[in-house]
Amino acid sequence: MVNQIFNQAFNQGIGAYVNCLNNLRIQDLQIAMKIIEDEARNVILNKDNASKILDYAKDNIEDVIVKNRGGDRGVHGFIAEFAEAGIVNARRAIEGLNPIVKVLNDNGPADLLIGRNTIQMKFYNNLRDELEQSFFYNTKMKMMFPKDHVQVFEKIMAGAKEVELNGKRLSSKQITDIRQIINDITESKGLTSYKSWMKSSALDYKDAQKNSINSLLDSEQKNIYKTVKLKNKN
Image (cartoon, rainbow, N blue to C red; front, side, top):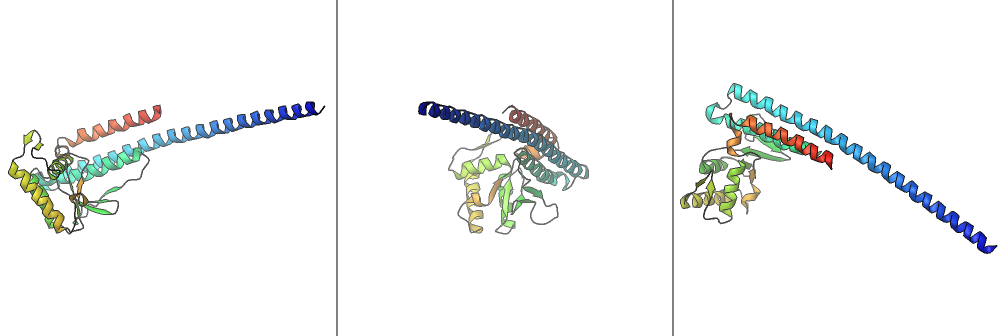
């Protein structure tokens, strides 16, 4: 009799435990489905936000080109500002992050605000001239240069003796001069590393030109759709 009562209680306990597990599994599944639904909704929302950010950048760039702001020699600088903000903020939107780059567009000393940092952009064809512009701004101003130029600067500062830009090798004198200028700028700012003040753009020098900027932004738009597709698959 005692054994029968024990077995009955044991079986009831096992049944209750199995029911509990099933309920937990159902709850876990419901939670998982909710997460998946929310993620899918966010991906669509982020894609729309990213597209709107790029469209806004395109409109501003078109206005810059039509008005020829800065003239033939300076228009690419304004193109670079709006393209930088559009591309960086669109990429962040895809990840569900808020915009971080703002074009100041106020004729002040800084071109961009990135987080809390004021940034001056310089897109010059001549590397030395581009770097030397840094001496004309206050010590707290961070400087942003084209991505391909920064890659050259980094190689030089890492001690490379052979460096190329656009398939052309820099001379030993050019390398030595650039290294010295970067060291002088760093010292003038009271810093110990050039990485504290030098920032890389998302664009190469050639990207910020009237005849190439639209293809770059179109490429970014395609990348948004590719990223969204991958996120949906996962």
